[in-house]
Amino acid sequence: MRPVNRDEALELLGSVPYGRIVFTERALPAVRPVNHIVDGGDVIVRTHMGAAILRAIGQVVAYEADLVSANPRLLWSVVVIGVAEVEEDIEAVARYERLVRPMVDLPMDHVIRIRPQLVTGQVLDAEPAGDLPSTA
Image (cartoon, rainbow, N blue to C red):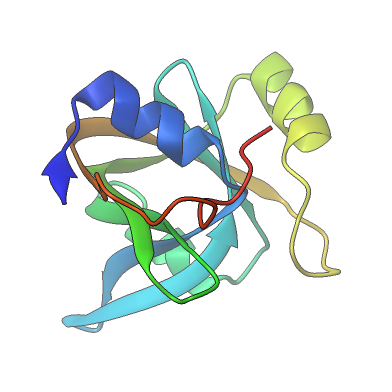
């Protein structure tokens, strides 16, 4: 594994639709799978009224995504750390409602933006020929 720079890490993160948001709930770590997009270097997720991650607004959270091959082998992993904010710009919210499709069949009332303060990533440098999944 080798580390990647911030730009490459965010590009990798943007190449997959799902990840995990990590936050504190009742003084304990909590992890929820969610779908996302990367927009202007920020991680954007949508959530529903009553979702546990809404209690993380204003707190430092982590967001992690990775890609594992079929053999299985970790190909890359990216972690973003930043403050979770509710997106309040009406035009941005409308845009994200079109771009971020929910994983669950619930009304998604909120858009959360994570502005990365720390971005780390690792990629597997050597993979047997023919074992890499297509990124196209």
